[in-house]
Length: 342
Image 1 (cartoon, rainbow, N blue to C red):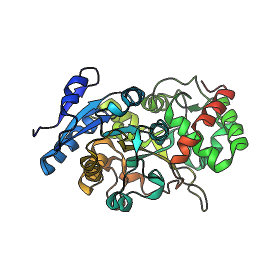
Image 2 (image 1 turned 90 degrees about the vertical axis):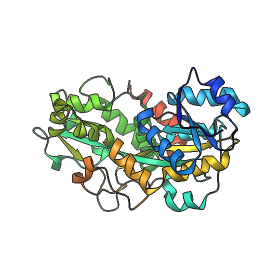
Image 3 (image 1 turned 180 degrees about the horizontal axis):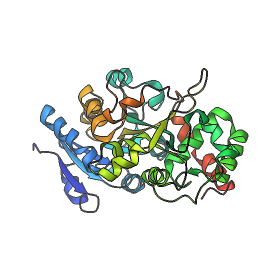
Image 4 (image 1 turned 120 degrees about the horizontal axis):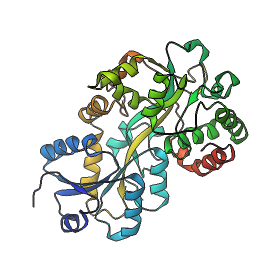
């Protein structure tokens, strides 16, 4: 039975998707990405290939738990989530399987995929420093490590330690700088907080613009959303902020990057179609769409940067294999707790 893409709530979808699970011209996707940030690509895929996609959206942890509970009986063929740490959790939970695809291995850089091919990145974002243009000289900024300097005391906004993006940043620093140095850095960072961590990345950017702090750490795509917003007040916030690429010096690591990524589930009965969909999401057309719609950087080299971020130029990104973000996650959380990062 040939179907168009359908988007189903996670609570109502079980009985419907179970009846569709193993049709040869379908593929079932559990996605932690918002529907608006994935559905148009799925509709294009169906139009181009005739393969229908049954979509279930939900939170990362909710969907991962569902995959674990469903086990071998899960109708899901694919799982999309944000952050390499969560992708690692899915692999370790046994809900993913490795795939072999020359197309994927050629397109996705080795540091942006699991070394055993359990997951592949679809888009990437950098976690960088934003500053108030009227209060901070960018010459004062240099590396993530220097954010612990006492000159930033009471001037830094960042979200909570429970946020996976911050956990992954710390996990990357453990790998690069070592545990002892990273603990010292976290201790200094916490002392520099302008306020107790509250809200998401956009809230940190708004706080800098409002004068509650002078610098913030946030993902680039949140800033891109403000730049592209239809609301004049959002664009006004973006105008007050500068974007700084940290750790760009010769021999330095580069800016920390993280990804949204995808893996084929261990229970998949439509593996061939699942791999076709991953390959489609890494096509030039899909990569360009991601950049324009969600202000994310492409994974596949040669594709254009988001228009909203083009003026901020090229940057050196950290080439650390993102598998390490998951492997170091527990230690990162423990160290953040020790420092009192709430």
